[in-house]
Image 1 (cartoon, rainbow, N blue to C red):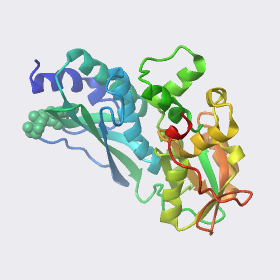
Image 2 (tube, rainbow, N blue to C red; image 1 turned 135 degrees about the horizontal axis):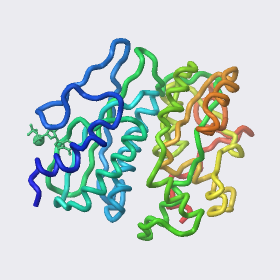
Image 3 (cartoon, protein in one colour; image 1 turned 180 degrees about the vertical axis):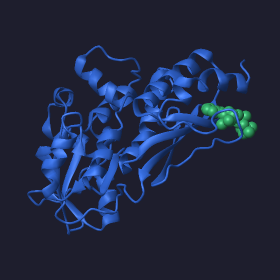
Image 4 (cartoon, rainbow, N blue to C red; image 1 turned 90 degrees about the vertical axis):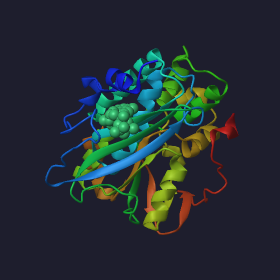
Length: 325
Ligand code: ADP
Ligand code: MG
């Protein structure tokens, strides 16, 4: 078995991962701490996610996909506040040092790290049940970020991308399907589950436009919009017919009500839900699309809770993919 140091040097100290972005550390992997400079006029944004095998991802999945997805979902929190990804650390607990697995895992991490420009600056490696903890560090311009607390009555509610694809893959995942399916539509769902696209650039554009309120959708639109509503002390009207569905989701879930339920309550989308005053609509569409499609799905109001635009309260929609499998 490789020593801990040999393993770190071989798989994690490689330049493609340790210098994956423009913000190189002053002192990186190999010393007791990493040291980074936060430029004048910027603040540091920090977030952490822990992913446990067979709870947050199937242990049997390809290690490239495990690495890619783990970093993508953690970077999504940086996207949610409009931060620019800069550095990350990796706490890795492994049952064994399997070189093939480690190579694949590092490859997956590297693919996403290079995509968003985030460099691995340190971590910790221990033996035990497979668990991945990632801490991501990003940069924001001083006092210029998105939060959950700033929704105002009258704001439009928007989402990026499409909703529900990753959640629609979960019943297949629970049947033990791990490999990429050949069916084109199922493959789209599979890809959205394993390779979510953290909306890093789009969220930074929202900050530049003057938007203030956003969250990333990890637990389902209703749950995560709910956090905005609670923290902003407002309510929402949702136009269910406007929820953006992919072609794949329409094909796999042709029944409208089932599809809407998945789009409202399914998790793992990692899209951004944000709010903005209506006069910003044109700028938002022109700036973000076509690279990041955006859809207006409702409006913030003063009445607590969520209702449809026809005034029906959305209370009896239960969370979770189990309800349609
Ligand atoms: P210490 O004993 O001082 O805590 P370690 O032996 O845990 O140091 O780690 C040695 C170096 O390797 C440190 O710079 C640490 O940040 C880095 N490192 C350890 N594990 C990982 C990992 N999984 N990914 C990246 N860097 C790691
Ligand atoms: Mg240590």
